[in-house]
Image 1 (cartoon, rainbow, N blue to C red):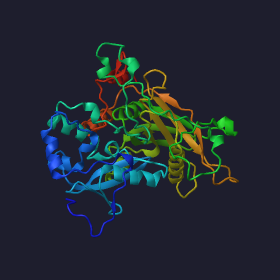
Image 2 (image 1 turned 90 degrees about the vertical axis):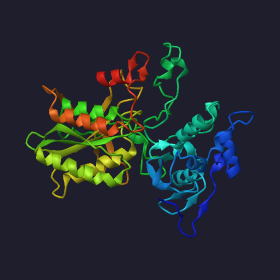
Image 3 (image 1 turned 180 degrees about the horizontal axis):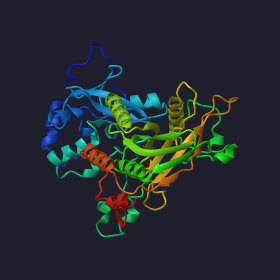
Length: 428
């Protein structure tokens, strides 16, 4: 299980200013025996080698991961506490060295990697294993020492860390311990499409773009859309379960005579966005479900868990790709609807999620290198008479899928002083 590095590997030691201190065997033993008697333990004292020796983590192939600005990196944890990057075979002495190296590939201006808060071991941030170690071997240690410099920027869309809001601490006695605060996440201000201009590789693909109206670009909406209330329910339920981004497909029918797109069923993808191995199997299962129900693929949805329900530049390109694929080679028009759901953005009106249906108009022929134009789609919502067994079954499968996930929403926490997360999902 990843015990030996490849021959003549390149060892990378640069971890920025926050790299961990390497300890000798004697120093590691001293860590276990010390209980705060005059020797304060800092975050730098606990290394992967320490965690390995105490059995809190185990060496293995592909057990480490970094998700940064839409890019995923996978690493092997070696028996000596070093990390081997799967893609190149490079060896890194610490999580910070690996995180800094990977992040600089995506963002050359990045100075440090916040390694212990950025690198996940089997889905959990490594910093959590530091806390476990301290609870076990130095229960009297100041827990604030664990988080020293460990706060990750967590720049991936919708995953900024939830921080305690001091203003809420005095709202109700005891609530601050379980309050999901109005976050101090960096507000990503949407830009207007007219400010984008020609494609620029240096532009952040997560830049949010305001939707245009069809009338603003001298167009009429070329199709009508009707969406079943059961579709909204299942889609919103799926997006509420996790703080990570989710995705799913939409099934329905397209009537060329009436130019009506009817969305009748949501098909949540029970898989991680970065899990390419299982993605094809999940998509094949959804295709079979569509066929068995006599439905066609008519669109897709995804979530912006804690951000505005507006498309990013990456979403615009994805939507354009979906539209072209759905149209096929016969050039016959069939619309593909994109929907963004924003469940936990505190800029929403009330506790209900913001649901944003959108479509992308290709750029003008004389400007082929421009981005597509994201436009708002007017939709009629059709109230179903009852909840189908299909939808109920799918909801139960989703609960089972996310039950043990580290990013599962804790529904006993508070969304706002008078509303728990469970209350919020019920109202939404």
